[in-house]
Amino acid sequence: METMKKQIPPALEEEYINMYGAFGWNLRDSRETYNKSSYLERDGDDINQVVETTHFVTLIFERDTGMRDYAALASLQKKFDELGDPRLIAPITFGKVFLGVIAVLLFAGWFRISREGLLLWALAVGVIVWRIMRIKKWRKVVAEVLLKREVIAKQALAIG
Image (cartoon, rainbow, N blue to C red; front, side, top):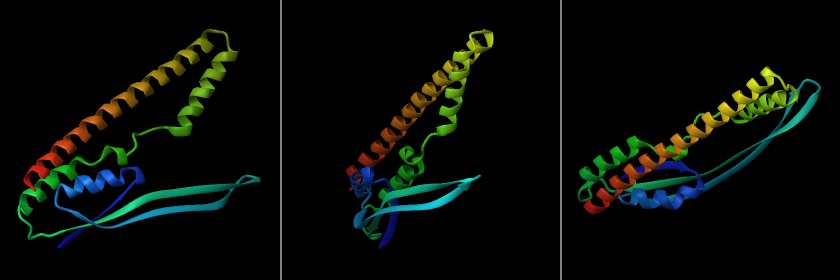
């Protein structure tokens, strides 16, 4: 008997149970973890409260290594796992810094009706367009990987 543990967002719990079931895994345990912690952080003379939240599900699976077609299922699962799940890895973003830069560029361009102001506006629009293109590309990559994972899981179902 072998075991495997996966930590995932709660929204993916049912999908992971079904997908790994295709490779002969049975769910042994599912635990939802929700932690909310806070602490104080000093910023010069100000003291701010910072709140951090962690929310995930831990799935524990087991599989009989003596089951029929174990080697074929394990081989397909290896390919499946090597693809990874791109939904668990956020695309590289600038987050608040990105929004701050855009706001500054737009704000500065607004008050400077000049060549520099127009350049700042053009730069801000260019950055927004670039960001939209990156998001579209990321979504396409996610869709392609998920499709490949689904094909492999269907092959495993056909074996099992």
